[in-house]
Length: 248
Image 1 (cartoon, helix red, strand yellow):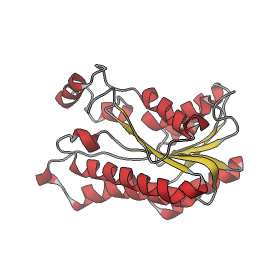
Image 2: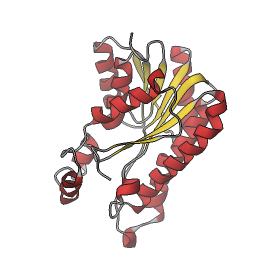
Image 3: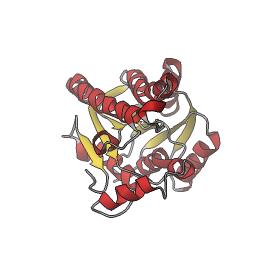
């Protein structure tokens, strides 16, 4: 039997990249999936179509999870469509790199509003519907300990996600809701390719330091998330799993 048969999952920021792979991976394990997107309807529809073609169930829901109304609408859509909620994957996020001399208030607020406030608001909306055995998986980044130059704000947002997740693991543990973190290393996605990061000296340096000798793929992360969402991880909460090919 599939690990997530009968479960309903929400994946934020799932129209491309890691989020899309997570949505498809959860569906492959039997979950009905809500594919959230902020602006790329075409991308979200393509993920839904891919899931449907493989025999799964999914719907696309537009919502800006950095706002309370958006987060609430997303969760309500999941419950309305599928009748319940069992898994929340907080994947939505943006990254912008800048030297310390170039930082601006807007640079800070854009990243913290989505990467941190979005996690809090979506989780806040979801907890009313999550029951015993539910799983929350927050996506962080290995940048919190690899300490990539020019990533001060982005690393700060992901450090906050790690801390928040630990607090919520203790806060929601008595309700038997698990909260864990997946912390990817560098992953080749549409976003990193468009931004010109793929093929850069920065990436070459990271790959050179990675024991497994390559950059990550979205499905490398999706498999870890599916494990944490399932009952196989029933004794895990408050954990940060670094999925980085061994880079430290």
